Amino acid sequence: MENTELTMFTETIRFQNSNIWIKPVCDFFKLDVQNQYTKIKNDPILGKLYGKNSTDLSENNKLYGKSTPDLGEIDKNGRVLLSKKGFVRWIQIINANTIVEHLREKFILYQSLVFDFIYGSFEQEQKIKVDYQRLKKLRNLYATIGREI
Figure 1: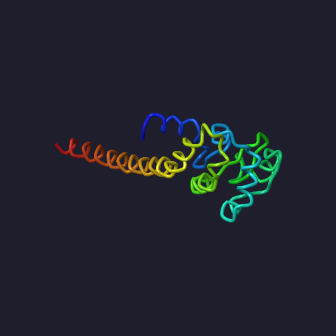
Figure 2 (figure 1 turned 60 degrees about the vertical axis):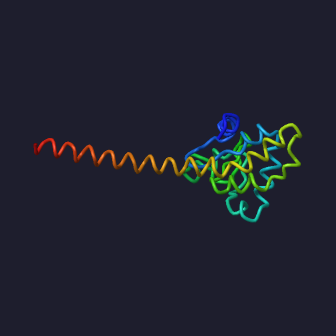
Figure 3 (figure 1 turned 90 degrees about the vertical axis):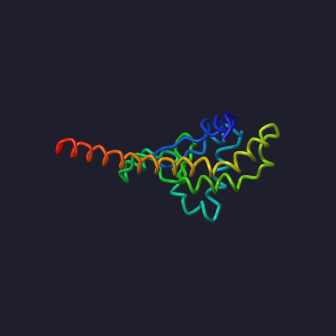
């Protein structure tokens, strides 16, 4: 992945746990967050991720013992949180013709690379976890062998 694409993704993909905020993408590509929230809510797949709409989630979250907004829910600052799968779906349903002309080409590139960026990094994280576990086992084995010698 080239430097430009990597910069574009690091500026727009903001995780909270394993979920992603859509507002940074909307800000970067000059999309109306409320309009995108409506699209998410009305989409047959993303609509299932949509929770109750509340203008102040902090009150809702206190009632249900939550510290973060539900997936698909909009918080008091107009931000929407989606799962990785939901985020990829949302990016793919955005019509590139609705993007400002000077950003359109970047957005099309973004649409084609977003899956690889999100899930490629996920696969890399899993590989690192496996390698770390193996390293721990090898260190324990090394210590055991050292004691026996």
